[in-house]
Image 1: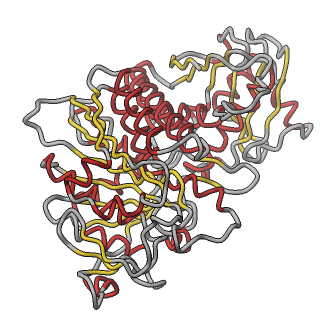
Image 2: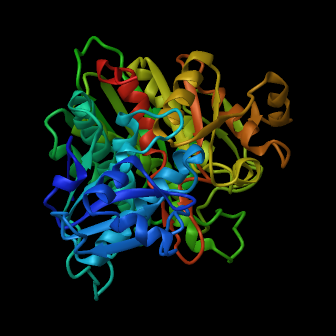
Length: 501
């Protein structure tokens, strides 16, 4: 869809539809009042009759409003004016886009970007509207033989801002929003692919394809043979039970001088996790195709960064692997020697993501990174702790943690920091190796991060556990595209392009 911004009066718009807000109880927004005045009280008369209360998400489509140039006027319920917050605003935008898409309005001018959202400026409102609109229109129908498309879908959306002075910042908001939405769509497409298609090799192919589309992106891969030569035995052990070979894919974005140390983002890419010998229960095992949500997020974030042509160096490491049970699979009781030289006793083969990541975190030392952030659907314990609203954040470096938390607030892609105190490290003690790969049920998210922290001593590091945010279950199950907005905002803030705040 095409997005643009302008600054003008609602009654002068010649469009298929003009979108304005109505507050509860039956109170026109400032822009709607302008339309009401020009139309001779047409809107206020409707409200007095009770056609629209103004509750959040209510919609009323009007045709042939007197003295209005636009073919239609869409009144959108925005709830109580003083209570309009970020979550409600995004829900209103999504509902509006869905409604417009069903009305046959192929273009619209939206004045909802002028609503007052507590603590948020025009840049945020326009960008979030773009992201919410694109997210609301997303469909995954690549594998369906019959694809249902809207008869006359919405193709152009213009956001109105109060003054011309706000146009440049709003145009930047659209550019950022479109780039992030594009990355989220790629993330969702890859994560939604079934595991018989989305294998570690598929992740490598999508990475290589992405690199071919951008001049500043390049692709390399680390094969199983190379992993063996490097001593990445933990990574290799996890993939041994699968017929699909493991591949570590690397995307190099060169947006600055080669002398500038890169930011490295590492994604867990378990394209299917059966649990190995410690096999998972059958119920909902189909959702284990989403265990590569971290890898999909890295792919999406790298696309967003390349779209924006940010002046920074970033490396995306996509740790592709599959955890299956067969005669070659690794076992509980095995002791593995990692690339770092540290040894790990395997207590449970379903705690495999940390074994893939620990060798990948050792591998990326060679890039002498400015900072490393790993992203993984690592623990079900994170869902117990934080539900499906916030990703878990843990870090050994306070400034990096604060950067990521700030990016999460700016982007609306929330994260919450959990402690990483030394006291938790004791849970990983093993009588047979340097550490165990499992710390027990208590504080499972934290002890998993404690395990990873032992492989990150040579750089600033943070860990995002996205088990609760990367996908949703139920009738509308599917990938969410998170945390692409958070990661992209984090990178934007590291550059001169992050000056919108």
